[in-house]
Structure formats: structure tokens, C-alpha cells
Length: 293
Image (cartoon, rainbow, N blue to C red):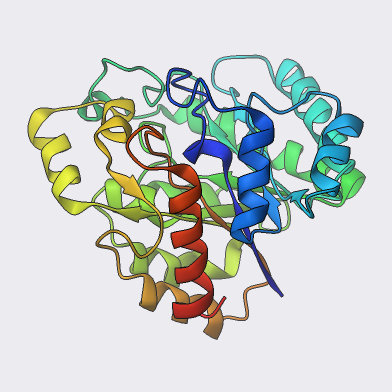
């Protein structure tokens, strides 16, 4: 069964707190529920106590379907990352979440406002070894001790950005312990074909992020040598059906492969330019009425 969720990043952006600074946590989750969604991911404004958070969500008919985790296996000790990861798993268990997300964030540029996306450095073989070994071990803990799948998110500006890099990651990790958090918007921004990627990886995918891409903004970002965060502010991303990606073919692949899990609308935008509730509604209507999710 497919369930529809939404990320709070359309209301408030954890990497750029100035976006949606005036929007409260309560407004965010109330508008998610009012738009029709049944699940959400976690933002910095959410209460840290899972018991308190669950009460806020329960009365709105929402649950937590996933939470980003910043793996730093290339920059920190495995034991330190493991402890932080375990803390997050305990938090997610309160919501009966089935996946834990995130990307390798050691030595990356996606969070640096003034560093162009073209300045991403390729990872060394030692980095790859640390990442794949660590993910296998963490994924084993998530599955065996918590019943969750580690669902790795390929991401612009990080060491896993392209189809080839994603393929290598999946080939060098164990299928039972490391799944994929597929994101059409990040593959498109990386100048990859999201349809080709989904066809290739759907069998390993445990969580899906759906966002659309404005191609004219993408071209401008590469032309002007902008950073990832600058691209977000310029409006590279929008909700499904409001950009230029072939969402219909992506939906067909998902339906045909009997995917079971969450599809999360995750379209980071400037809420001062794109009213979050309005765009959440647009996305939900397109996902349910047009794509038949």
C-alpha cells in the first residue's frame, strides 16, 4: 500500500532558517493534515520529545514516516555516528516508522551557501570504504533491532549524487541492510534521467521523495555557477505537477512494480514566494487525482 506524506521543508528550511522563520510548528503540521497528507518527516521546529510530538500529530491524523539522518562516516568515528544513529532509531520507534533516511554529510558542499555545486569533490576509495562498511553495520542494527530499513538518500552536493555513484553504493552494500531513498528531483538536478534511475533502482527503493524541477531555473543555476542552497532560493524545486519532470512515467513505474511504502512530497521552496499550504494542496491533488496514488 502506498501512503502519501509531505516534508516540512516547504514551510521551514533547516539549512536556511531565514526561510519560514515566522511559521510555527503547529501551523506547519495543521496545514499538512488539512491538505490531506497522512504522514510527514521531521523538521528542527518539531518537539524533541517523541511523546509530546506524537500527541500533536495524533490529533491531526499524522505520523512520522521518516527522518533525515546526517551520516558522517567519512569525517567521524563509526562509534560516534552509531550512537547518534541509535538515538534517532529510538525516537522513530515511537511512531512505528519503517525507514530511516539521510545521506553522507562528511566533507560535502550541499549546505554551504556560497560554494557552487560544480565544486563538489569526488570521494576517495577510503571514503567509500568507510561509508559502505558503516552503512552495512548501521543498516543491520536498524533492521534487526528496530525493524526499520536504512534508506539512503542520494543528494546534490554530496559524494552520492549521480546514477553511477548510487549504483556503486548499492553494489558495495548489502541489499538487506541498505535500501534507497529515491528522489527524482535530485537525479534531475544532477543532469541524470529520473525515469532511467527509477527503473534501475525501484527494486531496492524503500522510500520515495517526489518533487518537480523547473528546468529554466536549473539551466540558470549551472550557467551562473550557483550553490545548492542558492538554487533552492531561486526556485529550482516545486511540488509534483508544477515543473517540467515526467511525473506520469515515474508514477507508472511505481504502480507497475507494486511499490509499497511512503511517497513524500518534498519540495523545498521559499514560503514567502510559494505559499506552503497552497502548494501542499496542489501537490496532493496532482498525486491523488492525476497520478492515482
